[in-house]
Image (cartoon, rainbow, N blue to C red; front, side):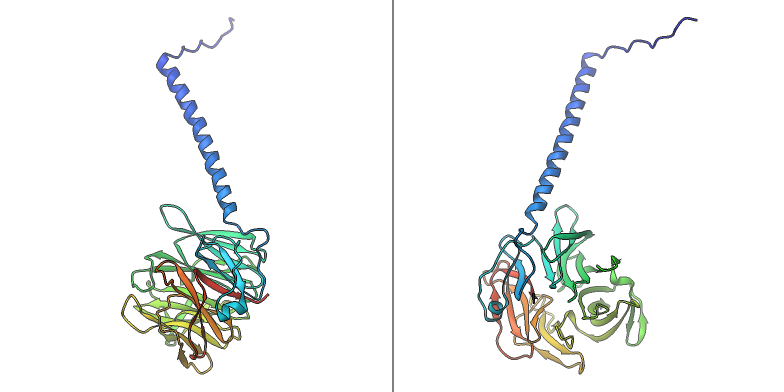
Length: 342
């Protein structure tokens, strides 16, 4: 039996040879572009990280520095009186919050569709975990122990002053690693009855010292409610209406919040403090509309952001929490204030 040999390949014509060469060039170019883009992304990530010498420590006021969008800090005593020298070099964040044990950095992810990186940081502000979520970053909180973190993003719209926005609020337990991607499935009680509605929106979580109790805002049927939540049984009950962006005091006895006092979309809110024992609310000396989740510097002083005097960016102000005194500027060109004790 004669051996069989494969038929010789048909020689490529001039056009075919050109097509092969072009395809090879494009393939190599695509690989090169992909490598360059990957290298650029890694370089960009390094530029958004904290400097080696920048870490959590105190007593200090940490905040997002408008110039460059990175976290900075200054002495807490200077923040209370106004002025002080800021130290730059923190991570790049659009929203930031911290305890002495760690921090949460929300960073808008570039792209056609809005995305947010929720980045958990350790005491040296080094990344521990990163979660990508759809939406625009708006609120960030960390419990006093550093165990619990929460963030809120706008799913649609870009302002709490409108009724067309939609939010998504997540809670992450760093001890167990359990992530609640959206609070919307919590068992909610309003006026003593279980409540279900397709339009519920939650935002502005603040944690108690036990890492189990928390407060937040829920919006439904055009009204906002303050809710008290329980992590263990995953329930929440409404306590009162017209409370947004609650912030629990260090002694866990009072809540700072923004209250809607006007239908004027340009200036709808005033800053208040609610006594959780008596349910008595006190308007604070700040007369401007505050669209922020205020932070407690201590049990007697609040910090919050207002639009900057130059019409660009924002400044951080402080005001006494008992309704007395006069607001004063703590940081020019800053937002996302948080006091770190040590």
